[in-house]
Image (cartoon, rainbow, N blue to C red; front, side):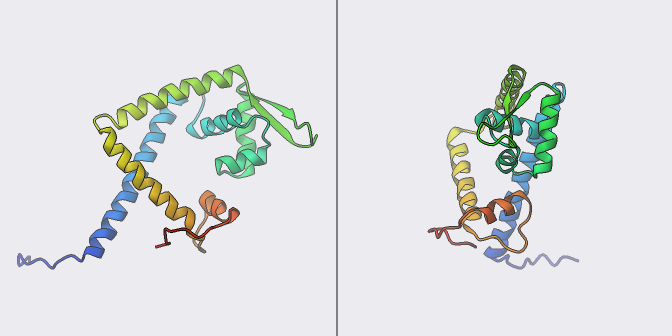
Length: 183
């Protein structure tokens, strides 16, 4: 039975609720976007993760599998599987490193370049759809807020709970003091 009286909500509880809501909304946007991108790429036998891998091959031709894994925040085993699939589909060709014959490198084929161009067009269209009606100043403000959150993540030392790609990323780089304290 509700007496109609409401207890005041502390501002720290409201902030915590808004932080959680922001995190959930960011995750939903990213997962929804990835799902739509994967749907569009399916007709080309590709996924968003494979496109990330191919983009790294394009931007860093001659990189080793280990370098690709680090750049894509995946395990070396996953990078090897992505590489094998990319070779199988004709998106990538493998070669040997000029300095170390045991290191296998990769570069894009024309088919890989065409797939990236297709994916870029899909990304442009999806981004336009997702952010239609949102004025540029609001997008800029959102980006500034997200950049501040990323700065917080990068400047906070890893905890025992850190895992996955971000935990490996944090532990592999020097954490420097910053004006932004960890909270």
